[in-house]
Image 1 (cartoon, helix red, strand yellow):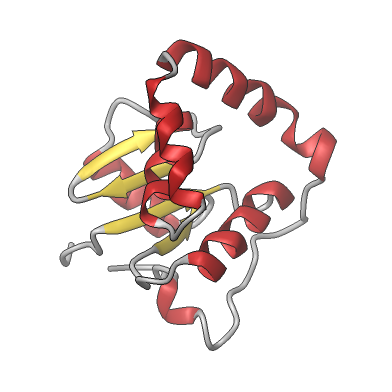
Image 2: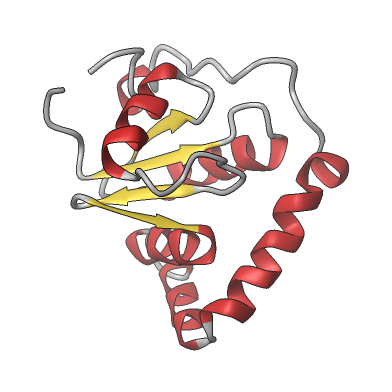
Length: 138
């Protein structure tokens, strides 16, 4: 596999909340550092199999940063930290114990389809954003 971008967000491509979150990150990524891959895409499965062998049931956002995978609330907070002000201030919540942060995260995650809806298929990036999304193979 060729080298990976330093910042990749793996998301549920059929989840409306997840797709809205990806669009939010794209709008606020002033440094233009983030890349994205739907968990349903083969490239995501390939990258995660090589870099995150302990996971195989992905009901969470996963964030690849400088060779390390972060999940759940830690992933969200580390992503926020890379966004501009005021969003990066959310990283202050890292002081909240992980089991509390992840409990809130999982409550939302378990109900995301019910509360926000689900698409029939993964989002397709526009031609202007295509370079931000990992293609089907690296």
